[in-house]
Length: 118
Image 1 (tube, rainbow, N blue to C red):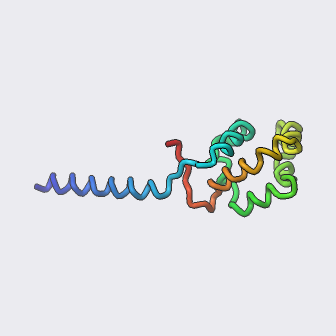
Image 2: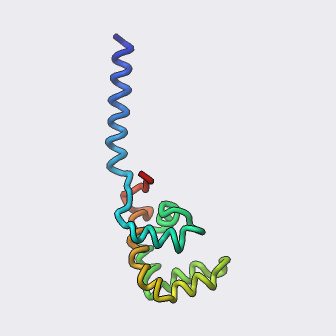
Image 3: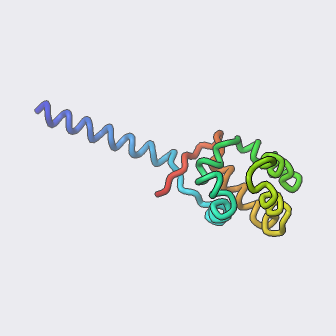
């Protein structure tokens, strides 16, 4: 009898944890932004969860303002700085940046989402 109660209790705990995790773990709907982020930023910054949670949603907005001048400044002195700045000044960045911003804002440290691969 005690063994059955322990099993039932364990199952109920696992089910509760699983239900709660579904509320917080999040698979992005910003697939275009994820694609651009991984292509342009992923080699240095890793997945969106590593890059996005560096800043808050407000900070990401500020970094991408004014043709992303602050983003270029943040990459100053880094390996590949010239290529990064060329990309930030390019037509491709102007097209892709709005999608990248939506994607990384989704996983900012003040967002409610924890990224998942599922």
